Image 1 (cartoon, rainbow, N blue to C red):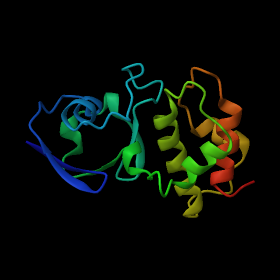
Image 2 (cartoon, one colour):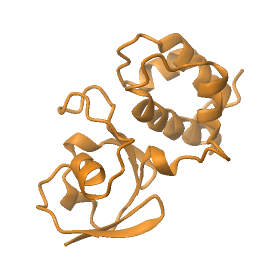
Image 3 (tube, rainbow, N blue to C red):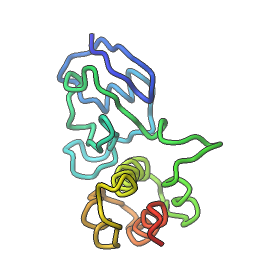
Length: 155
């Protein structure tokens, strides 16, 4: 049994310790917002927060998250109270196909949190481009960078 917290709820799963966290979230816990993209940690569609830090869940073994806190896109905000990043995404009409968006928003939310906590200088367009390495199949990078800067209060 592997025990950890997902979106503020304690869970226990009976899976092999080597099973990727992505599949535990999607198949065992029914949290399908975290997407499978490449399976090798390159695209970022599977990004979640592990104790507040962005992680590619396709490359993270379930056994490695024992006792830790995971936040998925389902735990980032709600339709009634969207996260600041989600509000910026909507106001800038960021998504096109939308496939990468949950992972992209998780990476953006971590960057915005880091900046707003004072752990990082005010963000620039170049900071966002170099820090958020998730891939967008539709090429919406300019709208993504603008939305992150809006969410961080830099615009």
